[in-house]
Image (cartoon, rainbow, N blue to C red; front, side, top):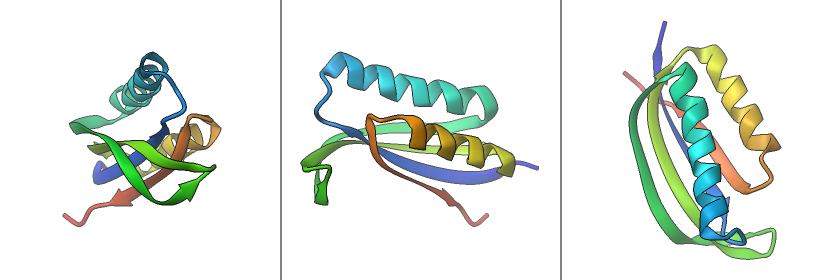
Amino acid sequence: MLRSYETIFIVSMELDEEKRNATVARIKEIIEKDAQLESFDEWGTRKLAYPINYQKEGYYVLVKFKADPAFIEELERNYRITDDILKSIVIKKDE
């Protein structure tokens, strides 16, 4: 059974534009492979609420999708092993 989710992740600004775009594209591919992508919104560079790894800005991306609950564990694992992602969260939406 597919459920609705939202995820937001923040990519490090220490990367050049090409590497940042590659990281965003890789996460998008992971989501498209095992979930139904509803929207993919790149917010761009924004100031962080507090410094993360001595960085004060990050590149924000919001994704809305439908997926099987088992996919969420795999997505979060990919966030954790990707050094270029500063922070991420996945939220189950009420339907």
